[in-house]
Image 1 (cartoon, helix red, strand yellow):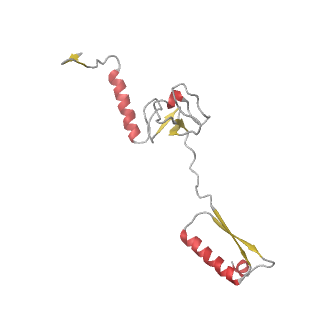
Image 2 (cartoon, one colour):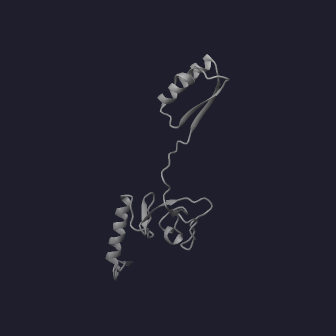
Image 3 (cartoon, rainbow, N blue to C red):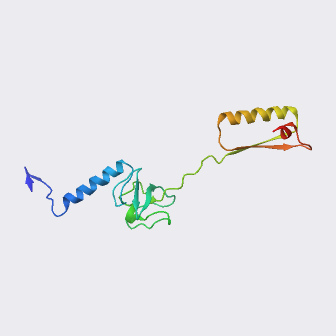
Length: 152
């Protein structure tokens, strides 16, 4: 219709149902879950497709440039699903499993002497007190075991 010279949209068919579904998807996105992944921008939220959860992710060397873009791997969906759902050329991909990011193992080497025994004991104490994750290994260069090896 026309109101004061401005064209107003005229809704026909299932327009109220479409608007309701869009509103439901927007509400779900606010709760970090969108059902399903269908071109609704999800930002940092997750959505599901065929019962599998997906999130927008950068895939190095690949970018979603259109809805016809092929999936970069078997863990991601192609442009048909990612286009309009993710921003910045990102793909909808299965989230990576949460991994322990503390893959640090501290190793130090010493020789057999009273000085290094003292240093080793304090290093071990401070390592435990600091709460640093990962292991602590002493490499001992000696002909015989020292006092630490026989007492701990």
